[in-house]
Length: 96
Image (cartoon, rainbow, N blue to C red; front, side):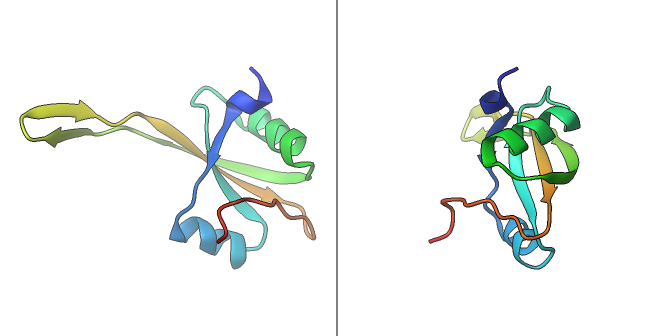
């Protein structure tokens, strides 16, 4: 699996922002569902040139949703919270 296929996008929510600012050096990403912690660690270290201390993952199950008479389904997805070494930073475009 290519490292660019593992990391899909950063998560930009209030909780992810608090983790980044107050908990120091924790970044949240949506990752490929088949990726394990070792692959996620390698992908972040390769793409962002930082040292990863640990990785926590969580699987989220999609839900069915209705819009009028039509029934749809939200996809299953996986979230990874990555802690990087002290004094390091990942520059993201999410900050306005």
